[in-house]
Every structure is written in structure tokens, then in C-alpha cells.
Length: 97
Picture 1 (cartoon, one colour):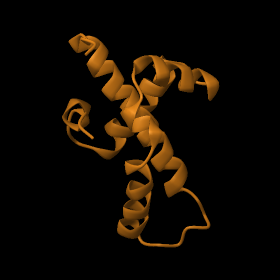
Picture 2: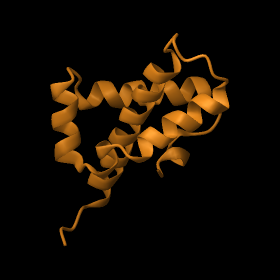
Picture 3: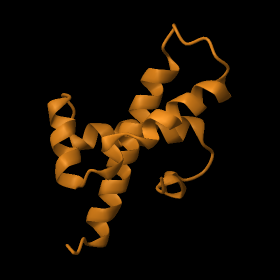
Picture 4: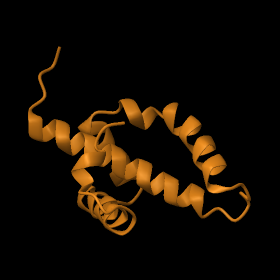
């Protein structure tokens, strides 16, 4: 089993969550989806639960970010901004899947 240091693990969790935030924002703003928020999130989460992103390591996530035209830093900023707007709590509270 490969040992991962704490900082790498935290960065991986944050980056994975940044992809989830970005995917949710795209899904949430889709004008063709006319369900209420709970139904939309339930549908989104069922797709997210099966996403390959949830099992990617930091190297794979970094490569995916680059392939999609983002830097790791940009995605982490997007995540930070999302939580600063929508949550009155520190973003560190939302690292778990």
C-alpha cells in the first residue's frame, strides 16, 4: 500500500471536492432541469456517487484539471469562493465525501 502524506491527502480531498463543486454549479444552472433543489441535488448526487473522479488520486486529478483547461490553483480558488458564498462555516469542515 502506498503511503500518502497528510498534505497530499488534504490537497487530493480539496481538489476532488473542487470538481464536485464545479460539476454541481454546472448541473444546478442547467435551464432544462426544472426540479426543485432537493430533487436536483438527489439526482446530481446519484451521478456524483458513481463518478470516476471520486477514486482518482492527486496525479490523476491534476491531469484531469489540466485536460479541462484549469490549474489546480484555479480549481481550489473556485472551491474556496463557493464555500465562502454558500456556507457560514470554514471550508475545512466539508472535506469528507
